[in-house]
Amino acid sequence: VIAVCQETQPLCAALERGGMPISMSGISMQGILTQLVDSVPEVSLEVRAELLAELLARETLSSTGMGAGVAIPHPRTPNSKYATKPEVLIAQLQEPVDWQALDGNPVHTVFLLLNPTPKEHLQILSRLAFLLRQEDFCALLGRGPCAETILATTLELEPRS
Image 1: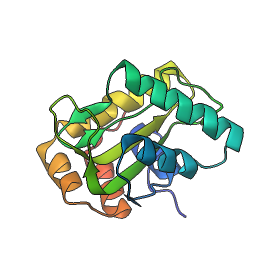
Image 2 (image 1 turned 90 degrees about the vertical axis):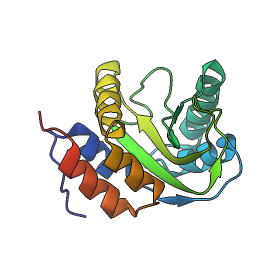
Image 3 (image 1 turned 90 degrees about the horizontal axis):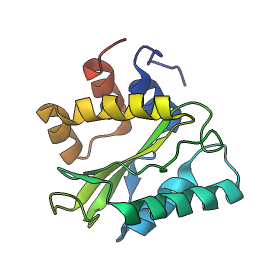
Image 4 (image 1 turned 180 degrees about the vertical axis):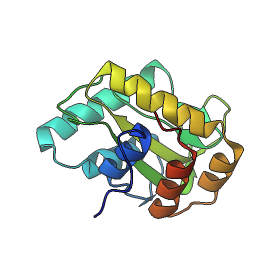
């Protein structure tokens, strides 16, 4: 796979590293999180179990369902045992799932954020928040695009720094 994203676009690069397991079925937040954690590259079963427990604990504090059909689960504390460089995995859900989102709507797209440091976490989260304020990007996500389309759109919309 040839990298198309530069580090000047950290969200795009993190999406590329995440590998984007695009289509998932599941009827619950826990089921979707389990599948996403199983898709995280290059971590042991023990670390996967820790990550899943941390993600579920984070959801009990407050939902990561942001509204507009999008959830952004992430460990409460960034940790290099989950990812040595920022990674974002995306799940497009075959059926929307109740995620206790802020707007009460079910979720169709999940962005799992894995970052080694708080600084990188805030950078990736702010880049994703910027994209989610773009109506065209949110509309695109609602149509269930392929991974390549999401990556190309991110490459186009994410500011370079």
